[in-house]
Image 1: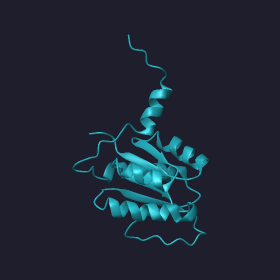
Image 2 (image 1 turned 135 degrees about the vertical axis):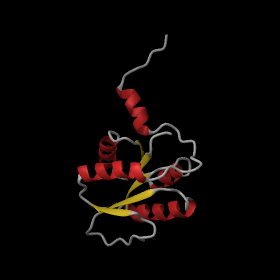
Image 3 (image 1 turned 120 degrees about the vertical axis):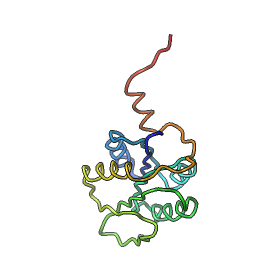
Image 4 (image 1 turned 90 degrees about the horizontal axis):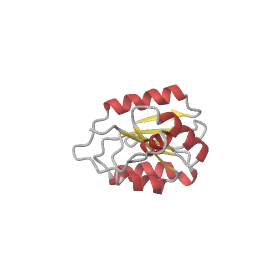
Length: 149
C-alpha cells in the first residue's frame, strides 16, 4: 500500500511553500495547488487522505473548491481541513468540512493533525493511479543525481 496523500490548497506562494516544507517531513506524500481549479484537477486524478484548504482565498475560491470536491467525489474518504482567518465572516458548511484551524497556524498542531489523519483515514477500495507526489520528487532531487551504469 502506498503512503497517504495530502493536498495543500493555498494561493499565497510563500505560505504554500512553508506548508509543503513542513508537511513533506511527515509520513505522507504531499502535493500542492495554487488555485481551486488546479486542486480540483488533482483530486479528480488522485485520492487524498487529507486536504488542507485556505478558505480565505480570493473570490471564495477555497469554499467553492470544497463544494465542488464534495459534489464530484462524494464517496472519497477524505478529511478536509479548512484553514481560515477568524476575523473573516466565511460560512463553512459543517457537512463539507471535517475540521477548521484558525490562522495563524501552530506548526506542531498542524503536523500532528496531518500524522493523525494519515493514520485514521481509510484508503479507498479502488484507488486512483496517482503520479508520484511532489514530496517524493523533491526527496529524490535532494538526494542528488542518480547515475545508472
